[in-house]
Amino acid sequence: MIFYTWLPKLKGPAVVLFHDINVREHQFWRLEIVGGAMRKNSPHFSFSHGHGLGVIGVGSGFSEELNWLFEAGKDEGEQAVLARAYFR
Picture (spheres, rainbow, N blue to C red):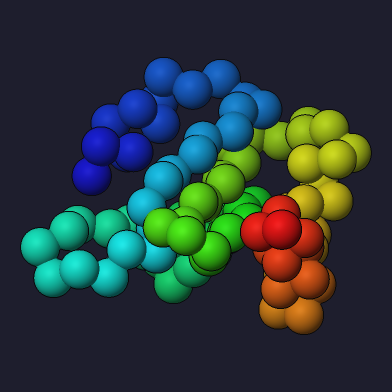
């Protein structure tokens, strides 16, 4: 996976964005953020509207705003409310 190739080059705190995480076409490779190993090891947030956008934190020492976003990603209800707000 290309992400793991770039991971050693990132100096934390870093934020990586993944597009098209919600594409479900049979010939389109997509990244499993919500169920994958990155979710267990890294702070993250997923926007599922449109084709989807994944936000993953690498390292530590994020801003208060990013920590708030990552914390919201841990709660399904909070994540849904925030994602709907961005959708609008």
